[in-house]
Length: 262
Image (tube, rainbow, N blue to C red; front, side):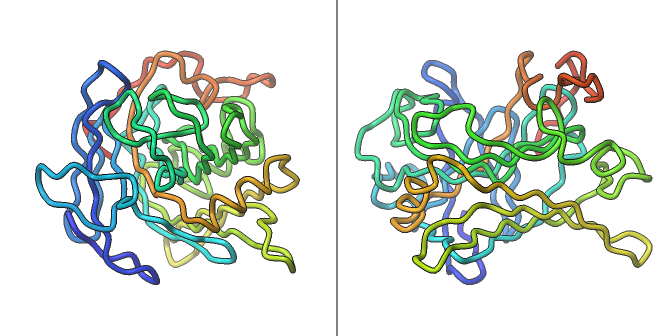
């Protein structure tokens, strides 16, 4: 479907055919300015597309967010332990090598066989949130948030209950900023979550700086990165939502229920 990105213009969304090589993906649905990824789906933002069209790499969207901010509203209420609702940027516009997923998808973990720079604005469920910077061959990257290893927040900040600053049983707003230095180089990524309840707005924020691969990410953003949305589950998601070294994370096993979409 086609929709508008404020400050950028009209964009389209095309669903991946394969989740990973040999494993069929489901559809990402777009209606108006709403995007609903089905469980086990991945969708790419493109400049244009039509039904049945084969999108070449140079038609994927190319967002230059250096010195800019991207904001959106998300609902992760249906995503329990072991579920991952993700919104991220990858350098697939400039990848001319077809992947094992029969498209031009690439990421830092080479999920479909091709590596490239990746910026995870959001990998989340109702118990955990990670924002991560990745160089093209750095799958772990540098993360901030809550769940698994990161402890920038606590259960009082982000959790599925009404006492938390961000009650993940309700939709909330996300804003990701990409500040630059005097030379135009990426300084880091700042991600803020906002939620208004009973007339009061609460904010939870994380900032990632001093990452070794910042020059590579500067080049990737300057060239333009493609926005990707995905929703998937795994029995091995404790890196995202597990108890962590301090045993305070909320998921001891990744056997929670994932809603049909997010």
